[in-house]
Image 1 (spheres, rainbow, N blue to C red):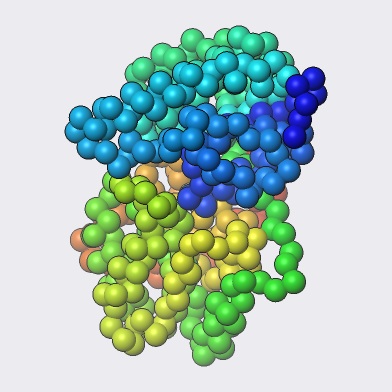
Image 2 (image 1 turned 45 degrees about the vertical axis):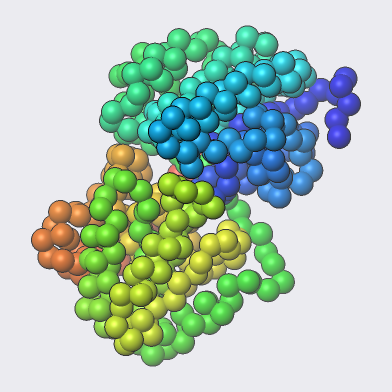
Length: 401
């Protein structure tokens, strides 16, 4: 525990509660980079504690669940939102005490800062940036940000009027141009900090059974394809499940590893364990025998070894894509919000890895698009191998003053 006179090196504001692999890997990188003398602003009691056992934690909302309003409806939802805001306001004096002793305040923006996941989720981060700047924290950074093409006007106004010394960093070129055009302030460009994730070696990989299964399937002459579907409202998930089922059924020479990316123990929040099992449940016995599903939670370092065993993948989540690319494997994506285009087209120069969902819907599966790309795997793998070192160097710019 830090004394009241001890100078804190850094404070870190996570994007949300744990549950998303992308958020967890990004937080892991931040925690390692910011060092042991660290304060983390928790959303719920002990929500991020296991990721940084040596850090100091401060609750943003007291002992209440910050996401309680997700479960409410109608008037109860309005009351829950107001109650959450009141509890947050009552904690401001505690935040000021921390900021007085801080040298750096880092907000992990991810895809929250455009208001896509709710006005409060974005605005409370903007307020914390303003508060830290007002308290004269020497360095205030909002890093690793994406921006969609229809951001909240309120959030844009608030970001535009943050003090100029608050540094905002976009994680790919599409978001950079959107932020510049709407915020009318300097925006730095980096790559996603997930490219800086370094797996931790374990005596035994907790997912070794899945790795051994993949080796047996390859020995039987099958290619190994990773599959992830995003559980969000950007696409009709039932249609994606149907097309995925038909893809697995028709690609009889391939085996599939189903990999959920985000699962929260909350109503109205993503549950990709359930989504992947919906795919499994709809398969014929023969097709199901060629599949493995790796339910969350799993260790991120151990998963990297699984991703290295893949030949190819199709995913709906960007941080699973980054994990696969970091393992030296190409992957195609069911894109949304433009952030995939920024990574695949502008950074990797492989726009052909973007899946045409409309074409897949007409076909009833992803087979044609997967087979076309798998026929070009050597070139795609070479493109990935060439660009990954540059993206890692670019990701370092999130942490540069």
